[in-house]
Image 1 (cartoon, rainbow, N blue to C red):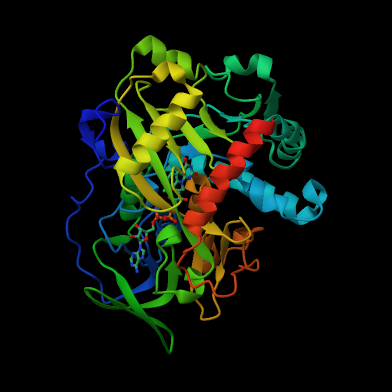
Image 2: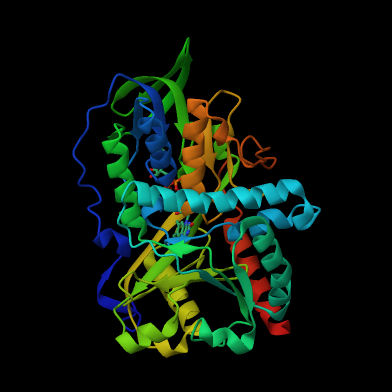
Length: 438
Ligand SMILES: Cc1cc2nc3c(=O)[nH]c(=O)nc-3n(C[C@H](O)[C@H](O)[C@H](O)COP(=O)(O)OP(=O)(O)OC[C@H]3O[C@@H](n4cnc5c(N)ncnc54)[C@H](O)[C@@H]3O)c2cc1C
């Protein structure tokens, strides 16, 4: 490994895991029955479990690996409130004037409200800060497109968004790399590992049973519900919720063929000189940008390190591939970080849907689900997880714009994304061309 990039103390695991004891949960016995069984152990599952358990419903959460294995403790911790529905909405015919689209943006904004409310109500200490997001325009054309987006986000989601022309860019970020950008004040950041731990504690405190290292196997309909075979015995349930997002597998082939598991990668740098660290993002915002191979980055909660993420590759690759690629992307934006080494590099799966929108609903077989984060699910899937819980409780306030929408797939797609390496290469080429003509 290149010693100019990799720190001698390098670890191929999430920086966030330094603060949480992954794999140290006590072994919990699998109950014989429960009102609801939730499959998956991330933000979606735990928000659903909290909602149900608070109402006195018996809930068992099954996580195939150790709790915290999935994307929920691997993400960048950027909390968006509507902004990342962009691609999903661009496929729609009538843009921001379409009431269905405005409803979706409104519900996306609700996801932000939900996340802040859960953190406050459950007293979760996860370095949550409402610091806003800066989105950098990769080309002049992208910047020109921001004006309409800012107007729509403000109208439909009270996003407190504004344009930042290139001349004022350095108020937001110490780079001239972008062609200007936009700020969305109504967004924040957190420590995803601590948020996940806090959700686990809250779910248990409300009475949910969290069973780790227990993979859900066959799901069989019974007279009044389901029989769920697991790697540690069988459990009976009235309702089953699938909350497996980018790790959705052969357990639910109907859902597996509707989501594309796309890898995302992050590096953490060694602690920086404090003055340099402070200068990079003066207002403490999260950063993202607009190339097809986009990047997202921020400082660590203690303000000492850069956490730099992106789709260095669209598939799972080791740190020897992802870290040099991300390091180069980081230096393209911040040449002043030359010589700064990487202490952590990791990867995880997101779930993209074919319409770029998140989905919740009930399958033909009667399984509840929420998934399809399209790379941005900390707030959205927390919200949709809770909404599934409310729906099971029969609450009218569970109705939202993402519920029961057509969840498209593609002919011949069964959940194996053989095309991703080609898409990745094509996207890199298109980005290179876009930038040359901008
Ligand atoms: C590198 C990276 C960076 C990201 N950055 C951001 C960001 O900055 N902001 C943002 O909003 N979003 C971000 N995301 C997306 C966000 O992390 C996800 O949307 C969110 O965590 C999904 O939560 P989840 O609970 O649905 O799924 P996960 O947390 O992925 O959990 C799914 C779990 O299901 C389990 N499972 C699968 N099959 C079974 C089975 N048969 N039985 C039992 N368990 C099973 C898996 O083991 C897994 O742990 C990022 C994702 C990645 C990977």
